[in-house]
Image (cartoon, helix red, strand yellow):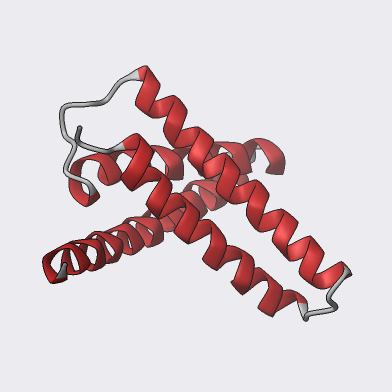
Length: 132
C-alpha cells in the first residue's frame, strides 16, 4: 500500500514537471509565432498548444509512465481524448462556479485546473499509458 502511494506521488511529481515544461514550450512557440514569424494569433495558439501536447505526450509516455515502446495511434487518440475531457470539464466547472455559484473567476480557474490535472493524470495513468 505504501509502495503504491509512493509510486503515484513520484509519478505525479514527474507529471507536474512535464506539465510545466510543456506549457513553457506552448508559450514560447506561441510568442515566437506571433512576434517573430508574424502569424495570426489563433494559428499561433494552435501551433503552440500542439507543440506543448507533443512534448507532454512524449515525456508522459517515456518518463512519467515509463511506457517507452507503446507509441501508436490508439495511444495518441486516447491521450488527446483525456486532455479534451480535462479541458472541457475545466471550462464547464469554471463557468458553473462563476455564473451559478458566484465564486471569483481566479479561484474558479484554480478549482477547474485542479480537476483537469487530476483527470489528465489518472486518465493517462489508467487508460493511455497503462502497462497491461
